[in-house]
Structures are given as C-alpha cells and as structure tokens.
Amino acid sequence: MRRIYFLVPSIGVTRRVVDELLLARVEEKHIHVIAKRGTPLEELPEASLLQKSDFIPAVQQGMALGGSTGVLAGLVAVVLPPASTVVAGGILLATALAGAGIGAWVSGLVGMSVGNRRIKEFEDAIEAGHFLVLADVPSDRVDEIEERVKQHLPEVEIESTEPKIPAFP
Image (cartoon, rainbow, N blue to C red; front, side, top):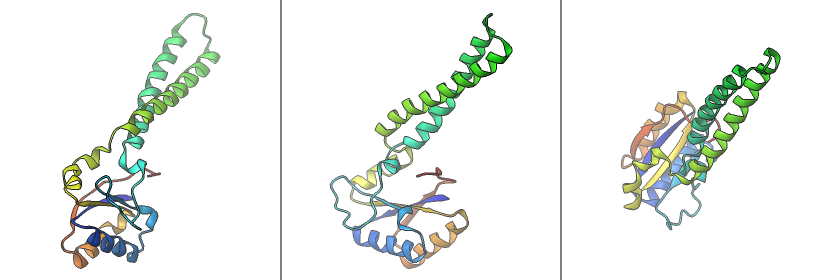
C-alpha cells in the first residue's frame, strides 16, 4: 500500500475527491481527511490519531533502539563470570525483548504527542482553510487513481506519494 496526499481547496471539492476515490473502489477505511481544527467534516472520513500523529514511526524507532540496547545489555550480562553458555542465550534474548518492548512503549507515548512529520509540511495550507486528503491505495493502482482524480478534478493538487505506509495505519 502507498499513501497519496491530495491538497484540496474547499469542502465541496473534498467531497468530490472522496467520491472519486470511492468510485475507484478505494475503501472508505483507507481514506482520511484532515482539516483545520473546528472545521465540520460532516460525513467525510476524518483522519484518526494514528494518521495525525507520529505514533507508528516512533514505535518502530523505539523498538529498534530498545532492542539494540537490550542486546548490548545482554552481551554485558553474558561477559560477567557467573553466566554459563546455556543461560547466556536466554539472558540475551530476554534483554533484547525487554528492551524492544520498553522502547516501543516509551516511543509510542512520545509519538502520540508529536504531530505527523509528513503532515507538517501541509500545516500552513491546512490553517489557511485547505483540506488534506490521504488515500491508502495498492502500489499498482497509484498512477491510475492519480490520473482519475486529475482528469475529473483539475483544481486538486496531488502533493506526493509515500513509498509505503505502515501495515496498520
């Protein structure tokens, strides 16, 4: 799956973009709309906290950093004299898993409080009253969907396409 970013000038055009995406058989659960705080989106699919925050990248980074730290701590524990070879593998595995878990948990908490880095570049436009539509589409349909939206709605700016999106956006 890849995420396409559409910058849309008004709520009426946003409705038409969402309708085009639905006609292109993009499921509603894969369409997310972000607007200025306090703007009523009516029946449009609003982006959740997972799309608006840096939660998923933060968890991934925390898991990697915590796991690495856990492995280092496990290696230090293995070097200590009382550790035997059988116990050493268990210690190494346990510290790596504990480090990854704690790292993911702490980073996830921090990531929830930080705005999405990708969306930050659109903050000025959103504050000016524009709408940002995020569409998660299969990689092989990106060009087809972008062309369909351009053809039917020339006033919509297709800003960018992420190379991939997380497994559970």
